[in-house]
Image (cartoon, rainbow, N blue to C red; front, side, top):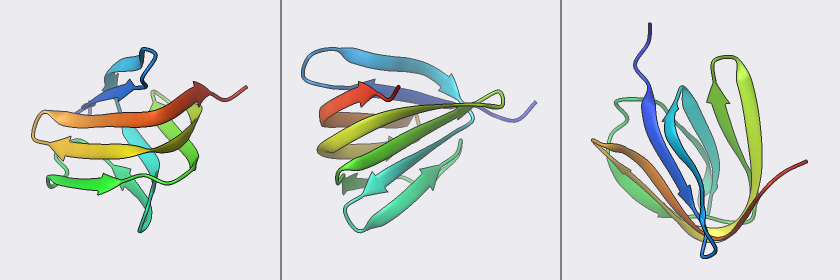
Length: 87
């Protein structure tokens, strides 16, 4: 089994997601990016767009507007100015 990435998605209202995932694709202000377990640390601002969470063959999409993504050895944390699960 491949390593999992610990991912947290937090909006001002509440934490929308926290747990292990396979991959996260996010809309960075300087271009979209994907994060897997073991990714090099970095921090970037987010733009408006879809955030896709890949886990065990399923994809969950959230719509985000602004905020920051922080990749550390512990995982990925996204602090979004606004985030809702897409329907």
